[in-house]
Image (cartoon, rainbow, N blue to C red):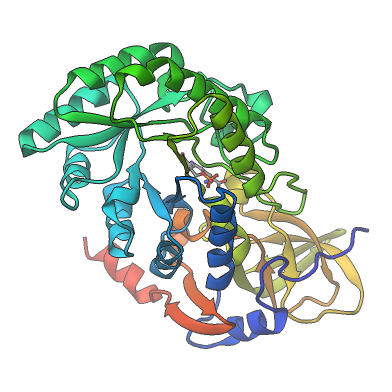
Length: 423
Ligand code: LLP
């Protein structure tokens, strides 16, 4: 039988602390707990990999949009990659300068475009254009507002799924994805942008996919982006950056040979080789900055042992953490107490009325523990949570130096009932 995973590695929060948090009446379960020191450290280490060269770490806010997280990253000099007007307002509200914000997304509304173009004195750093149609829409909005919009063209580098080595749902840089402008149409898109007086082409962008555990596909996508950049550079005088996107993987327990800085170092070398060393290099990491520094705390409601099957039923479900149900993802699970004694395999499941509300089989104490922590849940956990089955969104607690610095409480059951009946 495999050994039980070590508690909260590399999360710096100890098991005793997590157990105390889960038992804290102000917090309760299910609750996400985040280590802000760990998040800040990730950002510092990643920024160091640029060795002083012009760069922007544009944090993908979709991974975790909580104020304390975004403020911690803003304090480390990160910018933001946003995909909605709401995320844009979180980024600026958390102190990220508008010029350090890029806005991705295939279907931005007119209202969101107006917000991006109208933010600060000169609008945000760049609206990243994902289609020929969007080029015209952004120009029309800028014209209506009497402003110029700084833009980048997001090309789709057409890197195959095999090369990316990740789940099909989170691979974006292949030719059947809805994202980006196909490379073959990139030059026409650039020329159209340059012909429109309301638009200023400041960047070129690509994003290959998420949870990449090796650098190969990412570097291939960047190489394609840089080759394309070289081919149009002569006619784009305001071009200031190339953006290789996010996607650096983390170790969910099955290994992740490439570290975030490896992606940066290899892509920087490609950038130099392509003769583009004078341009700033942007990256858009989400997961790698936050995932390992958050856990989902849950209480064990009861075991169910029948006909040789052993289920451990916890009070966190797929509505709180949907990654296992949606992508077949596996999050390691550790006990909050009851360590020692015999270990057995438990199938850990939540309370939702769905067979996919299932966190997989885990080695845990035979005597059911009081509570458990689902590890590496700091990214795409709370931000993808829902209120399915009338379940309130989980609470959140933020720690710094091992102390609680902020708590966001769970809304009451009554609030949900009132909201539904109040229609
Ligand atoms: N930039 C763009 C344009 C993106 O589409 C994404 C993620 C990122 C940056 C950040 O990628 P990251 O560094 O976090 O891998 N919900 C899924 C992941 C979806 C990623 C979508 N795009 C999950 O839980 O695995």
